[in-house]
Image (cartoon, rainbow over all chains, first blue to last red; front, side):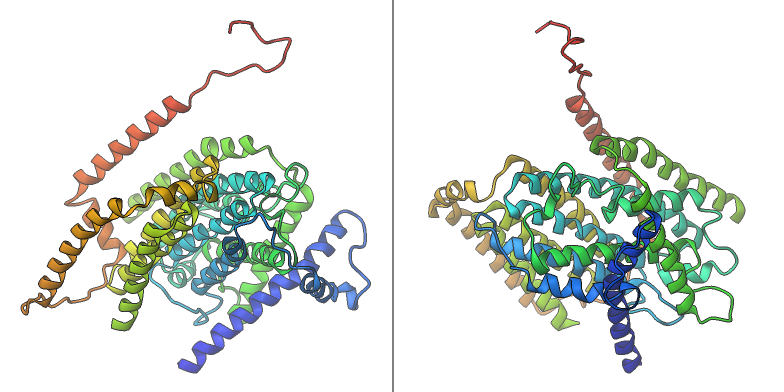
Amino acid sequence: MEAHYWWVIGGVLFTLLNTAAGLIWLERRMLALWQDRYGPNRAGPFGILIVLADTLKLFFKEDWIPPFADKVVFVFAPAVVVASVLMAFAVVPFGPNIVVADMNIGILFFLAMSSLGVYSIVLGGWASNNKYALLGAMRGASQMISYEVFMGLALMGTVVLSGTFNLGKIVEAQRGMWYIFPQLLGFLIFFIAGIAETHRLPFDIPEAESELVAGFHSEYSGMKFGMFFIGEYLGITLISSMIVTLYFGGWLGPAFLPGVIWFILKTFVFISVFILLRASMPRPRYDQLMEYGWKVLFPLSLLNLLGTAAIKLLIDK
Amino acid sequence: MGTAFYIAAAVAILSTIMVITRYNIMHALLYFIVSLLSVAVVFYLYGAPFMAALEVIIYAGAIMVLIIFFVMMLSLGSQTAGDERSWMTPGVWIGPSILCIVLLGELVFLILQPAGPAGEVRVVEPKEVGLSLFGPYILAVELAGMLLMAGIVGAYHLGRQKKKIVHRFLETSES
C-alpha cells in the first residue's frame, strides 16, 4: 500500500509537469495549424524540442526584481498558482485506485484550492507596484471571485445526482449514464467558468496584452514568469480533467483500454478545445464579462440546481 | 494526530501575532490568510472536513480576497506603514494585552482541571451538517439569508448610477 502510494504521487507529478511543458509545443503547433502556418518545426522531430529551448531560455534570462517592488510578496506570488493547482490534482481520480487523496470532500477541496489560486494574480499584481499590473490584478480578482460562484453552483448539480462530494464515487455513479446528458447546462456553465478561472483567452482580461502590457505579470521575467506560464497550463489541465471526471465518466470506457488511458484521452480532447477557443474567439470587454456572468450564468446555474434537485426528488418518490 | 494539531495551532497563534504586529497592512493580511488556513487544518483534524473546506473557500478564498481588493484600490501598504508605526505606541497595546493574559490564565486554569470531558473525535459528514442546518437551525439560516438580502439591496442602492451619455454632442447641459 505504502509503495503504491508513492508511485501514484510520483507518477502524477511527473505526468502533470511534463504535460504542462509539452502543452507549450502542442499549443503553438495547433494554433499554427488553425491559422494556416507551420509553427515551431525546426528543433527536433516536429519541433518538439522547442520545449527544451524555451525552458533553457527562461532559466538563463536575467531574474530581475524591480527595486520598487515588495520583494518578498513579489517572489512568493508565482509559487502560489503552481502550488494551489498541483494541490487540487490530489483529489482527481486518474483511474481505478489511482488517486493521491481519496477525500470525502473532494469537490470542495478542488474549489478551495482554485479559490486560493486567485492570490497569485492579486499578490503578483500588487507587489509589482505598477499601474498596469495593479489594473490586471484588480480585473483578475473580480473575475475569478465572480466566476468561482457559478463554478461551485454548477458543480452542485452532479453532487445532487450522485449524492456525494467524493470524486471517485461520482465517477462510479456514472456507470449507467455520463452526467453530460442530465447536466448539459451545468457542464456548459462549468466550462465557461473554468475558462474564466484559468484566465485563458477569450477571458484573459487580467493580462490583455493589447491594453495592459501583460497585466499582472508585466514586471516578471525569467523563471518567475515561467511559473505563471506553467501554472496556466496546469490550470487548463486541471479544468479539463475535472470536466472529464464530473461530466464525461472519468476513467470509465470500453474495456479494451485501461482506465487511465481513457482518462488521458478524454482530458486531451478538452485541452485541445481550450486551445481552439484561443485560436477562434475575440476577447470581450471587462464589464461585458462581469455582466454576462452575473446576469446570465448566475441565474442559469441556480435554475439548473433547482431543476436537478426537483427532478431527482420526483424520481426518488 | 496530536503532533499535527500542535503544529497547526502553533502556526495559527504565531501568524495571528504577526497580523497584529506588522506595519504593512498587506503583509498583515497575508499572515491572516495563513492563520485562517491553519485553523482549517485544525477543523479537519478534529472531524469537521466540511467546515475546513468552507473555511478555506469562503474566508481564505473569498472574503480575504475582497479585503485585499479594497486595500489595493486604496493603495495602502508601504505608504501607510509609517502611520501605523506611529500609532503603535505602548499605551495602545498594553491594555488589551493585560486583558488577554487574564483570559489566557483562566484558560490554562480550566485545562489543568482534572475532570476534563474526554474529547471523542467523530467525523461529521457534510450531509449531517446540511440536515442540522435545515432541520433544527432553520431559523438561523433564514435570518442569515435576510441579513444578506439587506446587504444586497443596500449595495444595489449605493452602486446604482444613472446611465451617463459621454458623447459631447448628446450630452445634456444640466450641471
